[in-house]
Image (tube, rainbow, N blue to C red; front, side, top):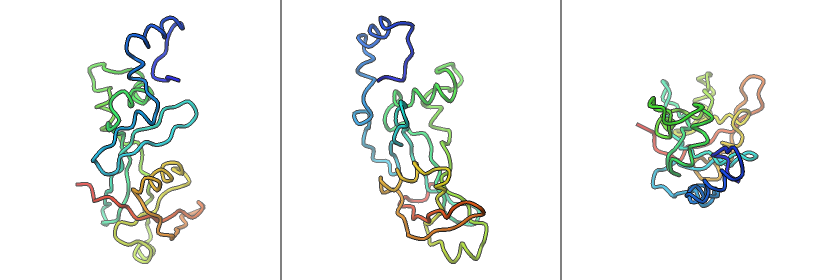
Length: 176
């Protein structure tokens, strides 16, 4: 079922589908366009939502430690981003960049957590390793693992009162 448009009646919806929207409104598996950019993937949908097209970036903090930031991606085409443009901005193409192109400049979220204890960081983290926040980003981390963008090292790190989070290796080059 399409979630990118809303209609005043079934007749209007039918007319829009027949006028060409049906070709644009595809199922998630048909919507995916393979990309030569490393780190692009579709975050599986929740409920009636469409999958979220994302791109993972391997970044370094001020101490040279790895982290991963997810950004909205255009790899599945602008129509795939339309529901998220509407959710983020409430409208599109208003002349102020509230469109798919503007959305790709916004972060979806950081999925890693910083390690403040230097001794722990030196002991537990290798080059390209980071602590992935599964309390807040369980589905995102699952998708990154499934796509091979990150690899679980088998190590865990407990921060404060949160359950231990996995330390994973980032299989992406550092973003410049």
